[in-house]
Image (cartoon, rainbow, N blue to C red):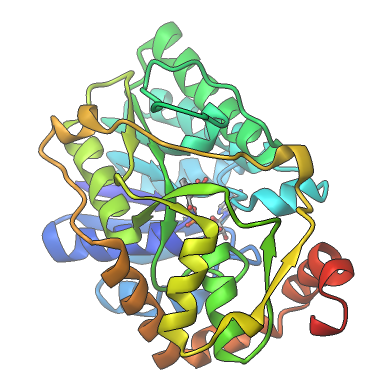
Length: 340
Ligand SMILES: NC(=O)c1ccc[n+]([C@@H]2O[C@H](COP(=O)([O-])OP(=O)(O)OC[C@H]3O[C@@H](n4cnc5c(N)ncnc54)[C@H](O)[C@@H]3O)[C@@H](O)[C@H]2O)c1
């Protein structure tokens, strides 16, 4: 297989390539990434030494991607490339170019070059929030933030391509993911690096929002199962039955970093109405393909904190990035004040 993986300088895409290089060593892997603020060459060092080839390009650049497909006889694409941070979308950044238009370009090229399969990596956030019960793949999508709306738009492009042209596309909807190499702006790595630095962490409200966490290796394995065995035109939930209130996750992080509640500051929720209270997915459909999550949350979280302790050079470089500092100042400056 000649596999093009987009967005593999980022968090989940890099783990997916790591997994493929380990369990499918005969596949040729090509990486496309725009190296935005969340995509870093330092995340791909091991992937490139293991033989993956890197192309610096944007997925919406049709000519560049067409060239890469042609020159490397690409047969499959897995698309991780996206603007991925909800809170940044709430600050007004435009996400549609990468998350919808970019998907449309990949879908068109999949059709034009008669590729065997495009796997579009989407999110459970397209469903919106659920008070009770679970999201099934048949649940109508109802996104609540500009980020999730842009991901839903990407999914609609895929659905329309399948209906109109039978373009071979499969979609996965992953849950909140954690693990090594996650850019330190999302809850778990953001809190981890701040606690390791002895800085206060901002907990929205009383921290009772419920998130269903999945370890990045389990998420990557779910995507591989859908790539190899998923039915064309279908979507697959990728989640772990692991619902936690944010305040509980924070307690686990305090224990793993050796800190205490003095470093937790309750702040007004900057997302206000856009903060989904609960996500929960039914994953029977993906499990029927032979996949199951394997990493228990407590162990996965402790190992993740250990990874951040051992790899300070990877994240301390990112904290100095102007885009990172601007985001933290704009999003948390008012509520954290002198504790920023
Ligand atoms: N992190 C999660 O909890 C989670 C959960 C479910 C689904 N997802 C989805 O998984 C995918 C990967 O998420 P992540 O957390 O690894 O994100 P990330 O921000 O760590 O990585 C995204 C990567 O895409 C690249 N990129 C962005 N726009 C691009 C463009 N137009 N062209 C080429 N490259 C581009 C970035 O440089 C970066 O390397 C995204 O599609 C996201 O929506 C993430």
